[in-house]
Amino acid sequence: MRKRGQQIFARVIAYVRELYDVRVLGVHVFVVVALLVTWSGVGVIQDNYKLQKQISRLRQETELQNLENDTLRLRNQYYDMDQYLELTARRQFGLAAPGEKLLLVPESVALANSVDLPESQKTSEKTKPEKPRYQQNFEAWMQFLFRRS
Image (cartoon, rainbow, N blue to C red; front, side):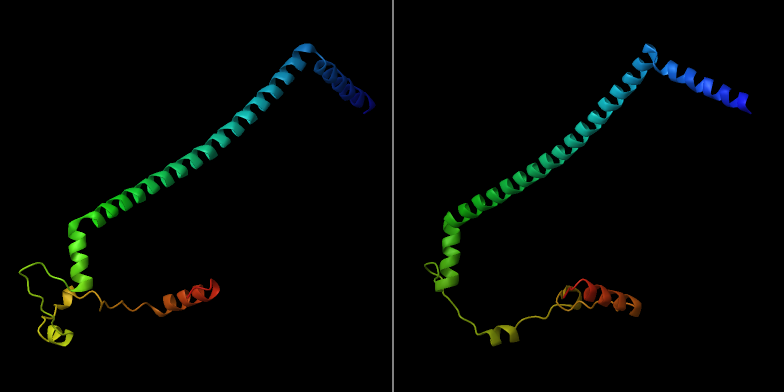
């Protein structure tokens, strides 16, 4: 038993001496440097991904702002047109173009002579299908727990 212990100790000593060899130390240093470079590369890739997401978000915001600017520009052009002024004068002041007659019809008379729309065209009276009781219960709990109105 003692001899076996000495053999194991001798092997450990031999292994430790091999670790001090210049070639083995060079391989270990190379592995450590390779791991550090890889870790750094992963960090750079992660930073680039975050920056790319930020750039994409900012481009979308810029595009949205440009669309809003175009909408406002078109609205301003519409407000400068004579057609807008004419419609506004007709609506607000009850004015008419030369040769036109303005007829004011009471709402009750207009509604009495109007035609009712068929059921398929009425959008205000859509009926919702009845949900099962368990789904109504679940939705009620979700509204209660998340304070939805």
